[in-house]
Length: 286
Image (cartoon, rainbow, N blue to C red; front, side, top):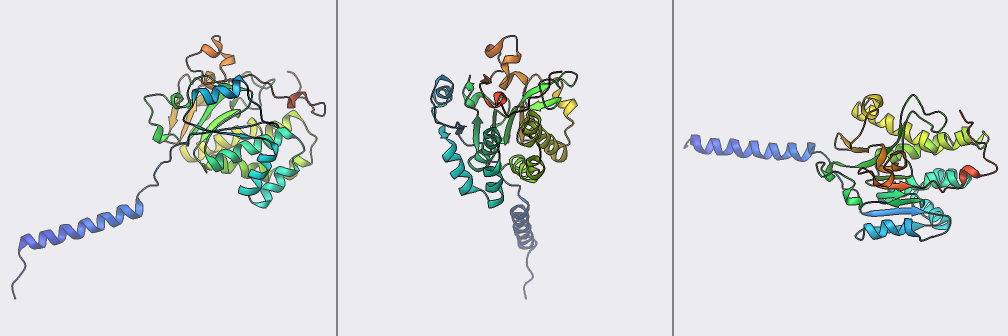
């Protein structure tokens, strides 16, 4: 019998190595990153159109625009959520609580940008991510609402607080899933309390929202909020996942330049009526 040549043995060995390599890659290849869909989502008790809502359409002509009224929102949650979430949503005693839960679920299902009806888009969404950052690495976009630990209790729920009036995400991001879980889990204890500013902040609002985001950043990316957020003046991309915008991106009213601040992306005009609800126990002034 003729013995195989060294050349043929080498070719066989290389072929086997190549096959094993491809099997390894197929098994351990990381999940491919998603891109935030080109959806814009807004909600109002009744559908309205004004210069604020039209700004999103005008500056983002290639995006799909979704406008939900109360009936459409209820039907959307009924269609996409399990019965326990639907039950919590429908049992909420105030419209603001339902609105907060709906916005999270809508983006969790559809992906895209959510922005309250009393916000104005100041620049195209495709410019919200800086040119030096890769959009493929951005899975979730949030903006700071406040970042001063020494002066917050009379206006905000947390010393470091993220905006909930505008945010963006790929569908199904863990942060959004965790927010829905938190809202549902604490529903029984919240139902036992009087309706108040603090209840809204800590059940469905930016207090709870900020807690869940910071928990996620700490658990998955070992982020310490004080180090990251205290002096943030430019966007930062955390681990090809969460894109944190500085204070003036979604809250330019805090800037001396207002909406003309170069970081400004969205203006918020605080036209929501829920804080004026006669049944609402207001947050005490400091």
